[in-house]
Image 1 (cartoon, rainbow, N blue to C red):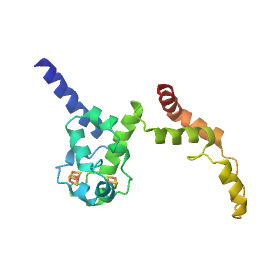
Image 2 (cartoon, rainbow, N blue to C red; image 1 turned 135 degrees about the horizontal axis):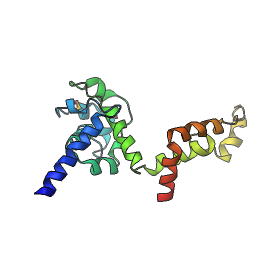
Image 3 (cartoon, rainbow, N blue to C red; image 1 turned 120 degrees about the vertical axis):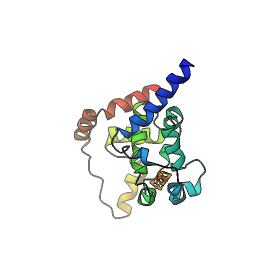
Image 4 (cartoon, rainbow, N blue to C red; image 1 turned 45 degrees about the horizontal axis):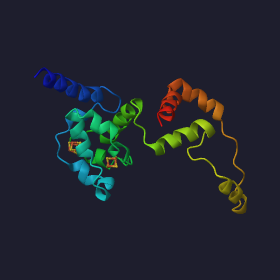
Length: 172
Ligand code: SF4
Ligand code: SF4
């Protein structure tokens, strides 16, 4: 019995954690009408993503299922749902709040980790290949200029971004 009570307390705490974070403030207004899911272009093409379901799981305290799964990373931030939600739940922003917690706890999909690594190393989201470099002049494009990688690294270090990425690299 005691275990059940503790679990419930923990579950309730998760929705409180989200509603107290930047972007998550409106989550408790959701009454599960499903307008977000029927407005979502991603939900239309894959059953793996449903914003109403993400909100429901979060409000139910299913923290592990939400932050360790890939659904929160499928939102393309089009804000369609947010425009249409009758309760003015800021759904895309709630998803950002969930992603931030996921990253903090080490759940970063590999593709985003690769982007992070490229930003830290080259100040570019996508590494420029030799092919691209040699192709540019043939298309009349100027050579790429050096990036301000050192300045960027300072910013990323001040925000702790570099440490999160390092943790992810050590874990893989
Ligand atoms: S549209 Fe708003 S109220 Fe309806 S399920 Fe989605 S988040 Fe909840
Ligand atoms: S912001 Fe995300 S959840 Fe909302 S409609 Fe767009 S893809 Fe779907």
